[in-house]
Image 1: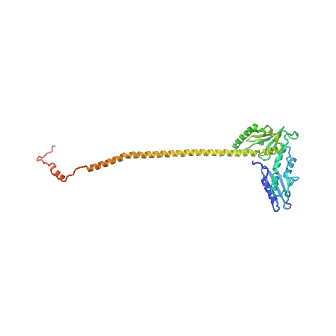
Image 2 (image 1 turned 60 degrees about the vertical axis):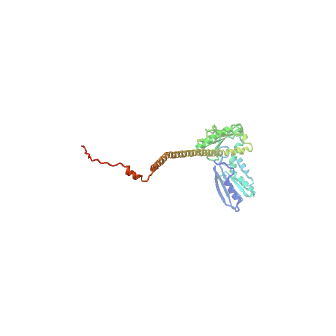
Image 3 (image 1 turned 60 degrees about the horizontal axis):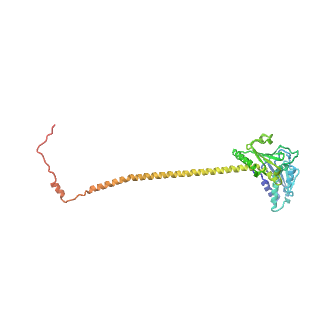
Length: 370
């Protein structure tokens, strides 16, 4: 549910268009807003100064207030919006609770015109709030016509009704809470419990006491099962006379009207916060794992480099003796080739002639024995 706004942006845009039009416009326009609110804007070119605005808005389904029209208190509140430029038409157009006659000739010119149009565009909010104001301002009333302990169902939004129960010296507002997601139920339950703890503290003693229960309170006994079927429990506020004194009445009314929106906005923000924290935590874990992986890869590279260096060193150490032996063999071969002998000219012929052993031949023959 979006936050309940006092001013209708779409209605304000159309009324400003009619007011600022240089030529009279022929308009018969229907608009629909949240909570089954319907607007009908009518303007005739024959009478451009008089325009008609009809409003159909959900009213109380039960209670002492009129179910098919507006109470005198609500009508009086509407007339106070802008008494000069707005006139309530009796009876209202068929199918609508209220019809207003707008006289743009009485709307001041200049900067004040937009202020007056804004006030006219907030009529629907005046109707809704005045119904609740009429109940809360008589919190101490002992009028027997006011039904005690009888729940009054307020249907400002079809899927988000709440109950107002008149009791002696106080009025209790009960909100059945429904959520689509199970995670939203968990967040909302924690929020309601914290709201009770904070509300019971001395610092917030002047605020309306808040209670939460997973089951319907006894005051709602007898209501339909469909209305009491919830997954978020029931939140109750006890409103006393000092909560509706003077300007506090308007503040209390708008706090109740926007309670659903406030809770759902809190759940949405909390869920987003949790998701951001989880994503940030995930990123930090991934960063740690990535860092560990880089360090592991660096250690592997160092081990490989050390192994390669050791292998090369081993090869170098193994090749050194081989080189030394090869050099020794080369040196020995050269030494053998040199032999360091003294050469004497003519000594070779002398050795062949005088230093050779003579060959002897025997006259006897030898016979091989068998």
